[in-house]
Amino acid sequence: MSSEPICVTCGTQYAAPRADCPICLDDRQWVPASGQQWTDLDTLRAGEHTAQIEDEGPGLVGVGSTPRFAIGQRALLVRAGSGNFLWDCAAYLDDEIVARITELGGLTGIAISHPHYYTTMVEWAHAFDVPVYLHEKDREWIGRPDDALQLWSGETKQLGDGLTLINLGVHFPGGTVLHWPAGEDGRGALLSGDIVFANPDRKSVSFMYSYPNHIPERPAIVRRAAQMLQGYQFNAIYGAWWGTIIPDDAHAVVQRSAKRYLDFVS
Image 1 (cartoon, rainbow, N blue to C red):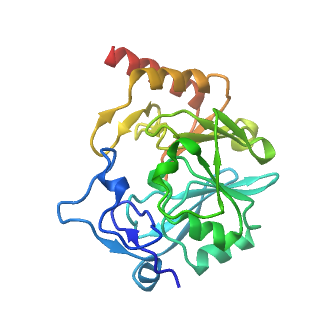
Image 2: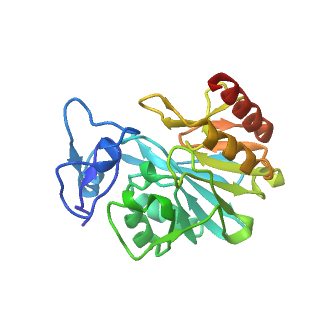
């Protein structure tokens, strides 16, 4: 049974029933005009939602649901040499997803870019008996505390097979991306959630404090993020939704986009 309440708007699961969702009350998100609504995993599993599991790139498998729920992001299963690793989290989780990932070799861990994608992370951690890595700067947004949640600090954290978590601080103070140097057949991949937003033109990225409310990120933070990524090589960027990919020359795309951003806001 999974009856802990889940916010319908953002997908965050809380440890107990409550009247409001702090993540949606924050100015990076919103509460619908119709008011706060709640569901739970048991209800979602009994409804129209089903698993969606598809290849997204070399060594990357997208995991989500159809129809989309809440923010609608999909997670990415990274087929790293040291074992499968899950980047970001989707709210929907059922027996089919657990079985498919288990068939692929299970998980060695989970890391999440920022609080909007915390969703049902504790359910995922328990289903695969793995830790979830979150940056400690965003600890206040944890809605369901659990021993599986591992808080890390500083600018970077090394994981298996060269995987590196990088705290850029965009969107949230703990906003993090994942660098996979072995991705893209050795050319490198950056898994960015929407910390570095892969734009629809597939040749630029954006940096925002709030996407739904159109609040731009502060210039000093964008400048720092671009500088931090300068030393990492990656040919492609994988964003938070199905098909949101910068397929080529992504390192240069980030630097050009950051310069354009800073020119526009200066």
